[in-house]
Image (tube, rainbow, N blue to C red; front, side):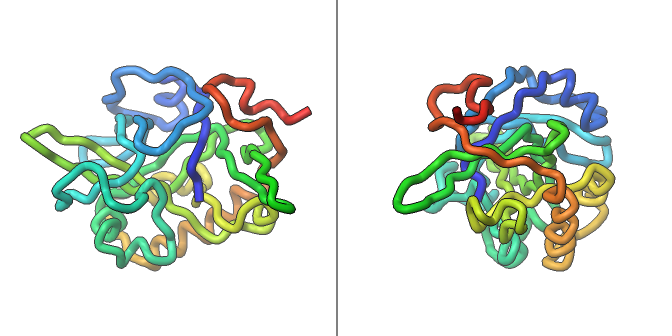
Length: 221
């Protein structure tokens, strides 16, 4: 799973990194303790080009009566997302990239949980394979999003059995391509490609997550 992540890039840096044609994100300040249901930047593609915009981190399908869902939707399991009613339309037509500097996971040993940071070794960005939906009430649209997860690769499975699906840079457009109808085979391919990303990650323990500052990424002393 992925229940907390950091994104310390500026808005201008995100626009450059993701080759954004249209910026619809009013503002963005670096954050180091991003939690579900808060606003995150997402990258999507359409006939008008690639755009960066805000989304509520917890996907709400368009047919839902309420924005809040009765179950957690900030993650979508790659094994079932293509067939689950909540996510299948997003897999088919509404795929996104979710930028992250790092994500946090908790390793449990002898009943004690220890926070860990997982990030690219070169301190570049992750691009998580995401799904999005547009939920509307009283003619006001709300973009919502979820991060696909998978069985954790060997490099990080000792911390937690699940991890986000993270895509190599040269596969970003393939995942976003709106002309491709997504299905389980496309999701499975994204999972396989994610192995390339996790070959070059670092993971280390950090202090318990409190507040929202750069110190949260510092190795635990």
